Each structure stands twice: as structure tokens, then as C-alpha cells.
Length: 156
Length: 117
Image (cartoon, rainbow over all chains, first blue to last red; front, side, top):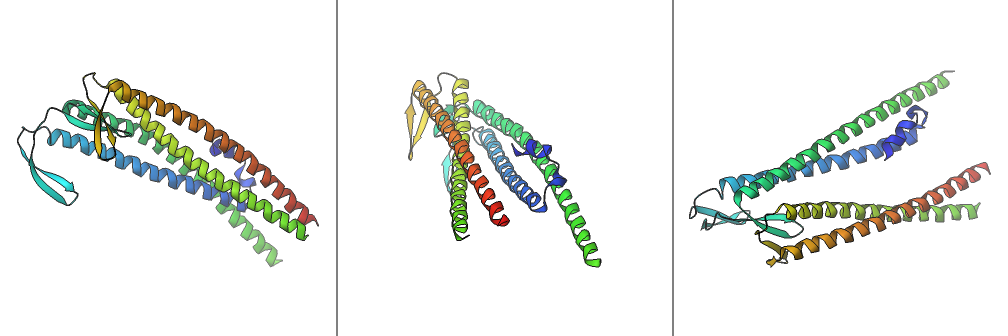
């Protein structure tokens, strides 16, 4: 929303303080976007892991001995009882029964969707980075010319 | 002069308050957006689901078996609610922005006047 408006204003005409504000705002936006990017990436990884678990874990014969995690550090031995259906969390508290191939299809679809979002986000991040670079350049030039101006004033 | 100072103080306080309100509204708006996305995802999942599949709903620590139509209806009504909330918040955000802009202008005007004196 701010970007198209900013491009209409000649950046070099802004005072240093305002440029600094613009820079800070851009930095903040960029940080927010980078965090979102990392979160999306993590979510994608989780879905991918789920897909792998369904393929490697449930893809075995019934009765295969397994270790079931009760907590991340406590496992109890068990046996694979049924490989016909798995219960998939599809969000907002809903779980549905799916066959393992359908579950894997679900997870790969999720990974794909997130991949698309990640690509979009990457483009936005790059654009913002470009904007930030431009603002920083102008700001630097301003500071340099201002300090050389005041230096000239002090000389006379 | 002292009056001006006092007025400036109250104006900037008001501005601060508007900014806090705005921040809260924007955060709420973002949360709604992500809930909306999640619900849309679930809705899509329901349409892709082959008919015999059993649907469960997590209620506290237990999974309850749910009818497909019931579940779809729940998601549908949630989406309607979220949609309404988003609209409401958006008007609120717009109003707060307008008001805070007005106060900002008043502050500028006052500052210029004080400098002129």
C-alpha cells in the first residue's frame, strides 16, 4: 500500500528525518515478511515430514513393531494395528479419515500450495529489499552532502 | 503559551491512543485473515473428500464423530462470521485512521503556530 505512493514522491526531496522514518518502516516490514517466510518454510517442512511418515511408517505390514512417542523424549513400544486409514488434521480442529495414498496426496498438495505462497512472498521480500536499498542510498547521499555542506560552511 | 502546551499535550495523547487502537485493530484483522485462510482450506478439503470418509472434530481432548453436512455447515457459518468481523474491523481501521490523521493535522497546525509566536 505504501510502496506505490512512495514511488510517486522524489525520495531526494524528503528531509533526512522523514527518510529515516521511511527506512525504519521498510526495515520493520521486511523483518515481518522474513519471519513469515521462515514460518511458512517450517510449516512446509512439517507437511513434508508428515507425508514421509505416512509413506515409511504406515506403508509397512500390520503388526510391525514400532515405537510410539508419548512425549518428544519418551517412547513406548507398540505394534502397527491398522494401515487402512489414517486420521488427518485438516485444520480448525477437524480431522478426517483418509487412506494412506489420499493422505500423502493431501500432504503433497499442502507442500505445493505453501511452495507457491513462498515464491510469492519471496518476490515481495525482494521488492522490499530493493526499496530499502534505494532509500538507504538516498539517505547516505543526503548525509554525505549535508555534512560536506556544513563542513564548507565551517571553513568559511 | 502554557495553554498551547497543554493543548499540544492532550492532542499528542489522543494521537497516541489512536495509534494504539489502530495497532490493536490491525493485529485483530491479521488474526482473522489467517483464520479465514485456515477455514477456506478446510472447506476446500471437505469438497475434495470422498463421501464415505468419516469426519471428526477435536473438542477439548477428545475427537467427536461428526456428520459431514454438520461439519460443512459449521465451517460455512464460521466463514460468514469471520467475513463480517473483517468488514467491521476494516471500517474501524479506516475511521481510526481518519481520526488520527485529523489529530495529526491539528498537532502540526498548533506546532507551526507556536513556532510563529
